[in-house]
Image (cartoon, rainbow, N blue to C red; front, side, top):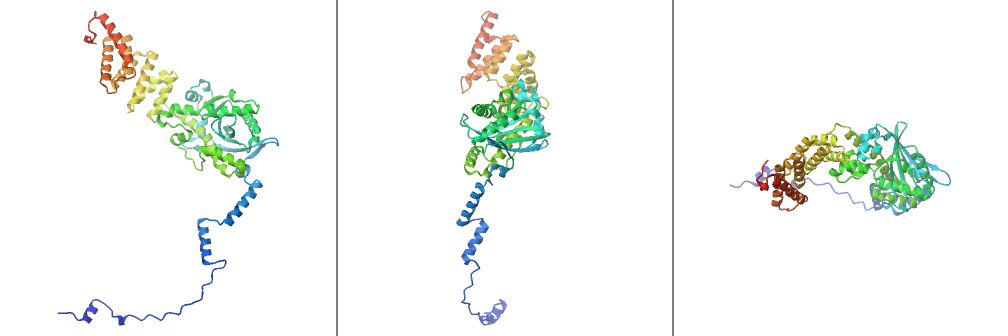
Length: 468
């Protein structure tokens, strides 16, 4: 039975066309054009708003701005003393720009305060520099020096256009930055630097022995002026940093040490390779605004030297064996003690270090230093214990086996065991796929000598038959 159509429409809530409401009549269209906004067409207004939103400028605006900047540069509005502050030092014959900043000793540069660096002990400076003449040095009587130059080649054509000196003064840490506004400012700047250096006994730098100070010495000589650097003790932190951190960090540039050791993060810095270009551009444009980042970069370098010294001294001031947190850094300190023939420190710190779960190559190096340090101190029981441990952990090490066999032959008088150590190690080396290694020839010669001695003791009997 089919459903009635009206009933279906009602059930589905549908509507007929005749039931739809009639729309009102449309108003007649206005054929008149909408007047454009004052000052231009709609397209021009849209373009203007887009330019404002995106910070764009029209060609005419650019030209006007460039004319205005050229005018301001011509009257000196962008000269370095007006952009950065500071003062011009000198006379009509020669003058340079000096920018001075002062920091409280409580100022933290990364994880360390400036005061911590200035309180570093002279004994720590002497150890880090491997220079006993620094044992009496006081960082509060030192000057921290850094330069920015026109190139890295050195020589007569390279100019230090920015020389910085940081030092303790009136309870603050003062940073003086001497800047050449042009080449003829150099005599006044060098004379002022020479006068300031006469107040100090020690100079601290980063790579200054190889670059900064020889370059400045050349500039003094060219201007026939006395150079005072030779009278100062010199601590070059780049060498100290490499002694402690190169094994772990590999890259011991000041920037990497800032990140990995000091916890310094720079903001608004200028990369080193762009700095000479900015100075040369300033000579042409007389616009010092791009130099703000250069002065910041240079100032941070000096502050980092102070806190790097504090980072070294604070670690060396801890109890023996806990100076550094990383295995590689601690082993570097033990190596430094060994180099300086401080064998008691090697034995104390090395024995403590062996308790760490360090990688095998590092353990082997430590055991070697401990064995040699014990021998040079005549502490034979400790020496034999370290030699035994060296040989037990590295049985295929020809150097370790040779040292142990030498001790057994000459000191312990145990030829049979000395022969066995040589023979077993050579057997491991012969079975190794790498074949002959350094030291194997010496070990074979030692084995032959020990066997000749054993043959004489046993009336020519086969040495292999002997025991302990």
